[in-house]
Amino acid sequence: MNDYLALREKMIEEQLVERGITDVKVLFAMRKVPRHLFVPKSIEYKAYTDSALPIGEGQTISQPYIVALMTQSLLLQGEEKVLEIGTGSGYQTAILAEIASEVYSIERIGALTTRARKILDELGYTNISTRTFDGTYGWKDKAPFDAIIITAAAPSVPENLLKQLKDGGRLVAPIGTESSQDLVRIIKRGDELIEEKICSCLFVKLIGKYGWSNG
Ligand code: SAH
Image 1 (cartoon, helix red, strand yellow):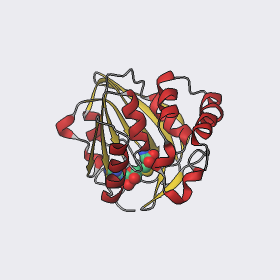
Image 2: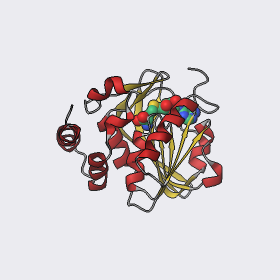
Image 3: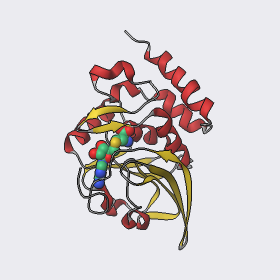
Image 4: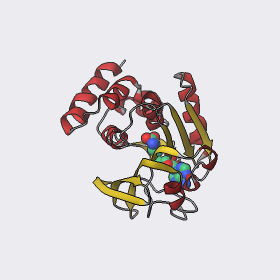
């Protein structure tokens, strides 16, 4: 039996704090959420390693550091309504739900939505809404959002999503080609979009009307 609490604590120190994750809300959430429950049983023992892991359907759960960095980059204070595109395992969704007041998460693969929903319900989250849909359209009925996170690589930022961002809102996404992307943050200020590069990264593809056209 692995001591997951100890492994999680080690992950926080060695992978997050040492690399500059300073937001206490992010560190608190990463300390609390049991990441091992979001990966397939057969690789549960690898849950706290410094890497992305397969979750089935050709998709992956992001590396802990990337989850922390993306969350920190959203500059959440606690009262926000957040949209996530790419629920996948539901791990990032749980981290967001620990910090923000409402989380809306869209996944295109039904089997993944179902699995993530089950774990999130078992853990008792009541501030998460999930939906199986093409997330490149966003979630119009619930817009506008204070923050939007895209956890799959997009060729460019889908216009629809920028439209669903509040004034002053932040969008964080990997933008680039299939083989390499920049993690970028866009801050909306009136008609102006302020874009900054956070780091280089590699994500699975965002597939949909305003993403890539195939798997
Ligand atoms: N945050 C997730 C990352 C999963 S990988 C985690 O840490 O577990 C990215 C996910 O985006 C995949 O599950 C993939 O199916 C999903 N995805 C790709 N294109 C999408 C789209 N257009 N709409 C919604 N989800 C999409």
